[in-house]
Length: 240
Image 1 (tube, rainbow, N blue to C red):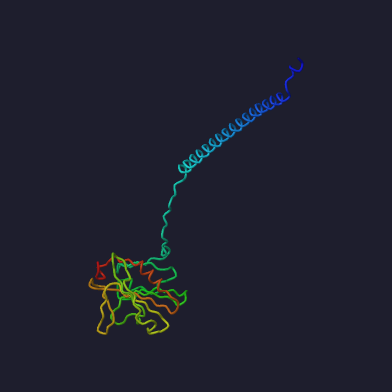
Image 2: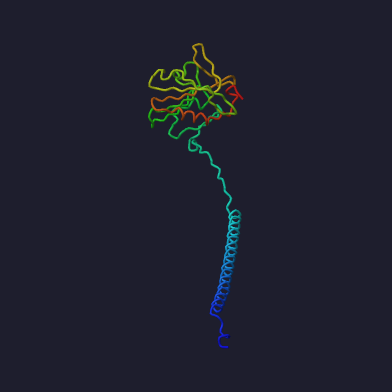
């Protein structure tokens, strides 16, 4: 009877193996499920954070666009090189222009009175002693032989240099001087070919304007002065 009640050893071993497999499988399944759940939870957290970051970027962009100050373009104002220059005005000839403060008026009496004569600007402080003369010729003479000649026109009371011609560079009476000349209005020539004008009438009159300097280069300065000339009585110069 005692032998009948004892179970074979192999049955015990099989039972242990089966129990171990079932228990181990359960543990594996539980751990794998826990790992999978943790992985899914982590992925969900990552997705949530990514959505929050994207939302923050979008909000930041909208805020920056809305609050960015408008760009203001400040207009640049051209500098007037003649702003500090002196102004000469002659009511008799309906003429005014601006000139550097370095120049002084040397002669003017007859010209100021509207008679045949000259108005001379001279600067003795600079190299070459630049000199500018406004001359009403009387037929007995005129400026020195010209090196550079400007062909000018009067439009809307302004003098415009229409053409520049080098006539005979440094071939005047004194080869050390440069003469630049132009005419305001129409000038006549007398029997000897000398230019003249009679500004006591309103018929085809004019003024010779010329610059002399012995050294240096003052041509651009002369052009700048010419650009400031204003004609308030165009009828005197045979124009409108």
